[in-house]
Length: 353
Ligand code: NDP
Ligand code: ZN
Image 1 (spheres, rainbow, N blue to C red):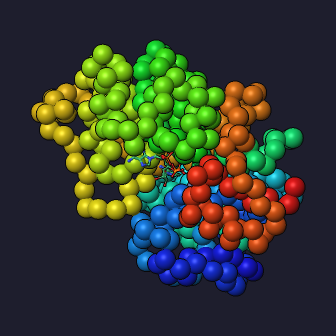
Image 2 (image 1 turned 60 degrees about the horizontal axis):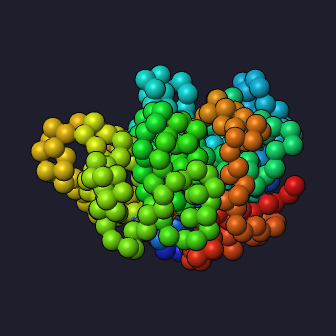
């Protein structure tokens, strides 16, 4: 089969590989829609995972089940399915302790284009099919559905990690597709004021549409100072980090009230450490907590989040700014993601409708 791969650090291209084998609990899936992710770019061009040779990229896909293992109960060939980017082993002790995303080791629930070939292939392997696949609801359009694989659950996990409560004032740092979903999630969880940090005009427009009350540009001065200024120097109750760099933590801590919480879903691809400002962190006693997490993945989450689309509570399809047709469009879509033109929020490739 054909796949689009990371050949080595900084290098990508088409390769031929054997079709993956299906274990008793697994499924083999054929993609009908895929989307590249900022994480694919970090993987290839920032070396965030280290060297990988001839590894097929991609972890966001809607597909059709081609084959299932002998022990799979709920899925059959021909089913259209949502495949989460994170596919834990649900019988692991880590999953039993509530941290499915770390099943088998830290971050090891992230298998596609990390520990095994990803979804930019004619066929891909899904472990624990009953635990990880979800049926694509009848009539759901692929542009919206494809955002369920990663953008929605990751953005929403940011709101979970930050523990948004009714009436909270929230800052969402970064309003690419992940942060935009964090804005939507914060509003659904009852935030009152939502400060959205970003500059791209169509991201800013969508952030407002999804419920942001204030827009902050990191190009117009320190964002913590801007937010403190707008909150009578008190700061916000919660911060979600979905963009920025290692220094963003210092800004987040500074803009947070004592007792506040930071939820980070940003992928830190560079450097040895992050720094936390000592005095602003209450010299270690400010009750300002920092939670960083990979989204949990799994079937139940896909099914529940899909209902938010079906009932019209969220409109993730509005984030899809570029659409390519046909399997070969994967390469162009990935390169577009790498180049990040100003009008790009999220590209998608529709392989078959
Ligand atoms: P984008 O690159 O599309 O968006 C990044 C956002 O951050 C933009 O709004 C950008 O602003 C803003 N930004 C850039 N620099 C700064 C800065 N110095 N201070 C504040 N804001 C800044 O990324 P995505 O939305 O696709 O992804 C966001 C992050 O989430 C990535 O790191 C990605 O790898 C990670 N991720 C994590 C996952 C998880 O499971 N935890 C899963 C998927 C993704 P501007 O408008 O100017 O461009
Ligand atoms: Zn992704």
